[in-house]
Length: 125
Image (cartoon, rainbow, N blue to C red; front, top):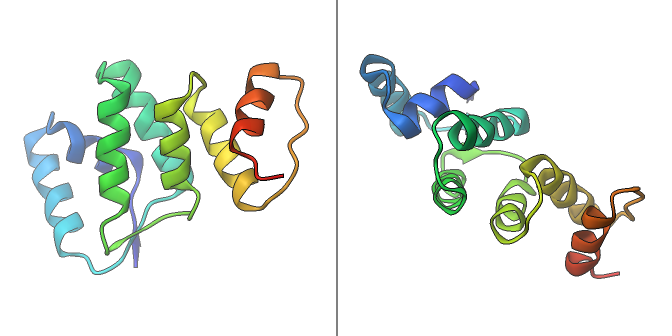
């Protein structure tokens, strides 16, 4: 198994540095098992949205499709966090937090009322 850093995903999704994008695409296509750390997903969303000015829905759709590939492994809550982020007006970091907490069926304690409201919307408790 190999793990990819944010710069590999940025090159893959933006093709902004052609030589690196080709390497990233080849590695992603040819590797049998690739792990994408949660922090890599978070940084990728941040850079695609803020530096590359990509649309939120596009970023969510692209990353959701990417992590569904059979050779891509990440935390189980990441696709759900992308869904939350796409649907709600909260940061991706908060979406990751909610995805992880909801997967664990844990209760959230926070002083952030907006976050608690979104948590309650998705919580089965």
